[in-house]
Image 1 (cartoon, one colour):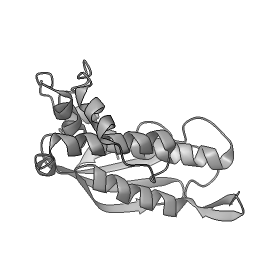
Image 2 (tube, rainbow, N blue to C red):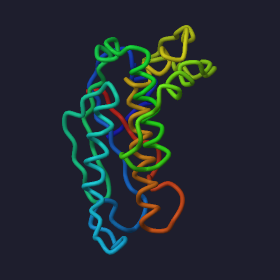
Image 3 (tube, rainbow, N blue to C red):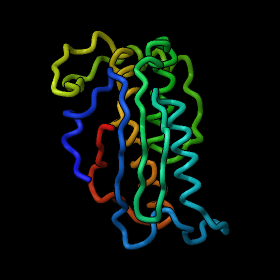
Image 4 (spheres, helix red, strand yellow):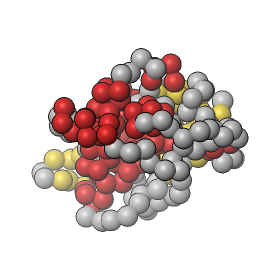
Length: 191
C-alpha cells in the first residue's frame, strides 16, 4: 500500500475520504493487554478507542471505519469542512484548547478552557508559514487565529498527530519509557 505526500492527496477544505494507517515500533504489542499499572490491568485497545471517539467529536471529521490490531491500526476518515463552517470563533478556540490539552497530557479527560483562555487563544497571532497548500494548490495566509484553527479542525494530519502523540505518551507512561512508539509518519491514501 503506497501513499504519496499527504499535501498532494489531502486538502482540509475539501470533503474527502481517506485510509490512514501506521505501525507500532516496539517489540511488544501496542494494543494488547499491558502490564499492571496501579494494580489494574490496562487495556490499550480500549484507551485507543475512547481517545479516537473523543477526537472525532472535537475535530470536524467522521471516523467511519477503524481496525486496531496489536501492532498497527487502520482508519477510514472523512474530513467534514461543512461542519467547521457552523462553528463560531469561540467554539473553534474551545475545541482547539481541549485538543492541545489532550495532546500534552496524553489523556482525553481534561478541564474545559475558561473564557479568559479562549479570549487569549483568539488574540494569538496567526502562525507564519503554517498554511499548507492542499492537493497542489497555494493559498493566502489566514486572516486571523480562528480561521487558522478552523482549518486545522478539518485536517487529518492534526487529527493523526494528536492521536499518535497521545498513544505514545500513554504507552510511555505505562512502560516507563520515552520517545515515539511509531514506525514513522502515518500513511494515507485517498479513497
